[in-house]
Figure 1: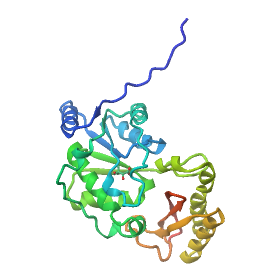
Figure 2: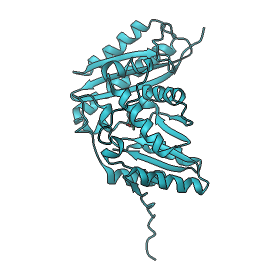
Figure 3: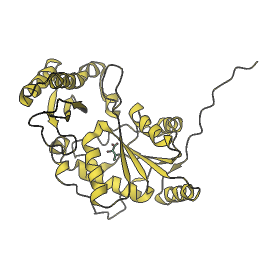
Figure 4: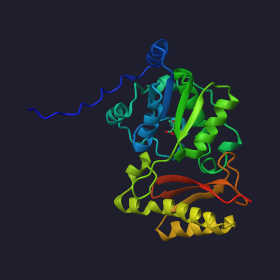
Length: 295
Ligand code: PAF
């Protein structure tokens, strides 16, 4: 008897033009489907596919966008080196349940003469915003454009980019966009490193060292859960954990309210421990939600 082979799901169609994406979405709506949307910059890993799987659960028509958005990269950042892996992304999206990939050509997102931007407010200023000044303006602008093309009922983002999720939630509220924002849990490698498309750029030695950020978050979590109240002391211990690992540059280490992103002066209830470091040329971010003892 011939061996049975498990059939791979058919890769979803790729729309590169705004009109194609609009038509596919309109057809799905006509067929009675709701629209779920997962915006990405490609180089998909298990963190992304967990978002696509979550989007697929409710039976919605799932659109995944793949677009490396230039306006969210600073002039000295890694836009040109950002991994571009459309074929592999298409297969990964198919396995996770995507119905359509929208991989727009650059001039679809930024037509010649484009000059309008969506400027977020103070939620975009601390943490990553303090080190990447125009980053969240670029994110809000491209996500608003994508939302205007895809018109999703619900959009999925990862907790890994916690500040992005907070800023975008506020954007849809402030700009009256009738879109539900779902934030899915951060996905880690087996040893704890937060999954990121940028991990692929780490050398073997840097990959080992990169775990220091996760270890620093664990240090903070353990101290907070043991009832330690001095934020300064906890952050100093995080800094030590990172610096012991080898040469790294710390952008920030913070303990904040997960909704307002304001520094937690005295931990009480849910807090977010977050950080960003640079190892060589690679910038890594990570965060952890920690339930501390309420007064
Ligand atoms: O999280 C990302 O990958 C990007 O910031 C997003 C939301 C796709 C916008 O380019």
